[in-house]
Amino acid sequence: MATVDVTVRGAGIFGLSIAWACVQAGARVRVIDPGGVAAGASGGIVGALAPHTPERWNVKKAVQFESLIVAERFWAGIDEVSGLASGYGRTGRLQPVADDRALEFAYERTEAAAVLWQGLAEWRVVPATGAPWEPPSPSGYLIHDTLSARIHPRQACLSLAAALRVKGCEITATGDDQGAVVWATGVAGLLDSGAGNGVKGQAVLLRLAMPDAPQLFADALHVVPHGDGTVAIGSTSERYFDDPTATDGQLDDVLTRARAAVPALRDAPVIARWAGVRPRAASRAPVLGPWPGRDGHFMANGGFKIGFGMAPGVASMMAGLVLHGRDEIPEDFRFYLPGTSKG
Image (tube, rainbow, N blue to C red):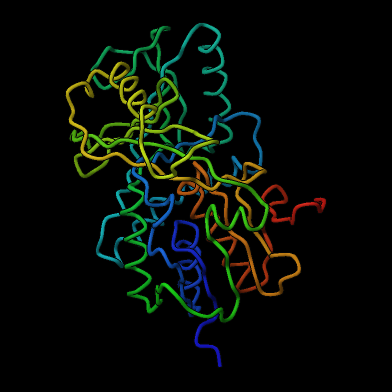
């Protein structure tokens, strides 16, 4: 006789979030991961929960928006149960405007956000002031959005894991599949299924207390102040690499560029360097849904750079599918085996 209703394989952000949604719905859940909680890409340090631009609206942007809107309540509930801090904070984001053409686009997106973001967040153009916590802007203007948030990835996973244990969910290194099985196994799972591959990223953590400051996006870098007196900077995107967990001169370049762009970072000491491989689906969207030909098995993978931002929405959709057969997976996210067609 099965002792659990759902087995989740993978203790990264997708696996733990789906387990939480299932537990909240009354299911008995076991999470299995031989590496432990946040052993892969979910153990990173950056945690930029930043939206795509509010234009050319599509299903990925819509799900991301809905997830970012509910994220504060989602993480507050988890942290209350666990007694730990996920590091979540909706602190917004600043990014420079390069030139007059970019400024025109920025104003157009302000109008689009007023409609698409439903008055729940803003995308606006503001004058640059030259403050130390601002990236240089050739146009003299910055984009300030109030939808972006930050989270500490590893701390968030630890908070989720602790909350699950409080609710009676076992998290273990080994175990048999029982009940419905959700495969949220990151890069290894994408490679095994043929649904995608991995992209290496490198990031650096500085000691600098800016807990209430907005995150910055400048020179293609995310600069994210955390609530624990640190600032994370990332990341590289490497399709080809020899060592998945080693940092090198590419990270040195990231740090140099960030310090050139943000004066406040110039004297902040480095306290940690991180490298890992993030799961990137071939579709560039999360891969979700039933596993064709494997009754009772489901895929949830491919978070790549937006996994933490999408987690509340992904968890809700997957719990509804796994527990109740309610299939709300968007076609653009649906898992198809290689060689089969969509639709």
